[in-house]
Picture 1 (cartoon, rainbow, N blue to C red):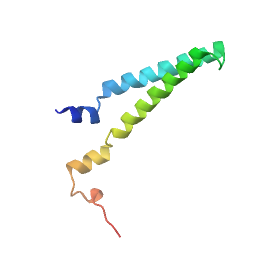
Picture 2: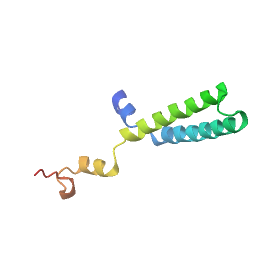
Picture 3: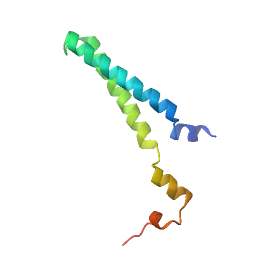
Amino acid sequence: MSLTTTLSSPSTTFQRTLASRLQVALEHARRLTALYGTTNQDVAIAWETVEELTTAHHRQVAHQPTAFSQYCMANPNAPECRIYES
């Protein structure tokens, strides 16, 4: 398996780890906001971390082929995979 293939199709374990890290960061940021308000520097850093993790999560999801596209790659002549142009 090449490095390019590894990077473009991340494992589900890594995705779950990223999703759980995002959830923990979101809860932490909410708690800090409730404790210190919105003007605290630690609160701003916590929300910036949430934003970065959210961006990373969305990038991963965008690079994953759907089940339908995987099916069409395996079966390019299937009727449901044909593209008709008008």
